[in-house]
Length: 309
Image (cartoon, rainbow, N blue to C red; front, side, top):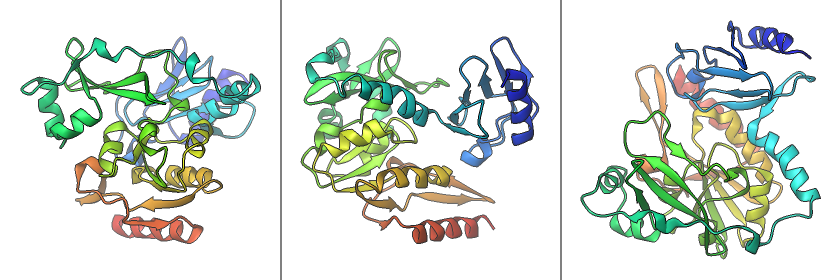
């Protein structure tokens, strides 16, 4: 199927006109208002011609267009199906010694009175949390740095800007986030984990430090393999409810391997809309959760639909 047919099909599917550029088509994002944002007026929705990558930097929506089939699938699922399958065929998981250690000491420790410290305090961090998670300060680029560890070694890091930058998070270009889990070393002998999207949400998801992050709204099968090698039996899913379809898709991935609970995620009603919150925005209790079944999925949808009325 040629790119012109891709353009026409997506225009029909989403009801939006697309503008053609050298390497992409773009238009008003049809997902922003479904993911807790105001409607997109600035042409943030991109479909890249060569790769089929579909992306909105404003709301974070991303998927892959298959071209010869009738639908899309998520970008992380694309990594799972193609990249991870090749990875497994090549002999499975790399040994720990093959992962080059990341030099976290290039960044200073966070000091009281610094911009990084003030930012972390505004996000409800404490001195003890900063020390435990070894948060660093990238003063040159105005970012707080969270080391990503596996088997006791720092293998990479994620940076979070503490200034008004439209791009909030930064990874080293060589880091394949779909293959790793933040804070997995802390849950090796735990019977449960609290699964969050982002690093800061994971830190505040559980006071016992069993919160982990998948660096996005999806858990890949390579990340599930990591969890299966720990003592974890129960997974509490603390993904935001701005995309319930996605939350339940991830539960369906996990339920074959673990006992899965869905956390009652924080939200507030503002006027005629629902504003979804992160675990670090409130006093979060992961145990306020329900066992995932098709019936509980139905009940959650009904509850949110009632609030929207």
